[in-house]
Image (cartoon, one colour):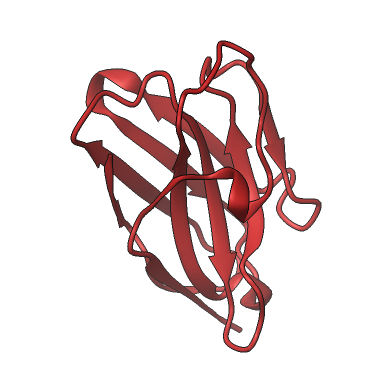
Length: 127
């Protein structure tokens, strides 16, 4: 699976962006998906995740209520809708996919839980 992230950019605090991550190589309808971010000098951190069924979602405390993860299996694309952006949201955002190793449906929150990564897209929020 190859992942291509897009949609990043420069936005003022309080603004919105929608990130997209399109998968190619195989259908991703059975992959759990996640979004992570990494700010300069910091470790990569979990932002949002969705089970392979799309039923379960989970968010980091810092973004809950502002960000929404969703997927369109017909388009092999997962989205991250980001609202009420803050300067502390500034980071490179990565999408990730987990191999469908079982039918068990859950959200995975660790970087090591994922097998495929996109190249990252920069999000910069100005104050």
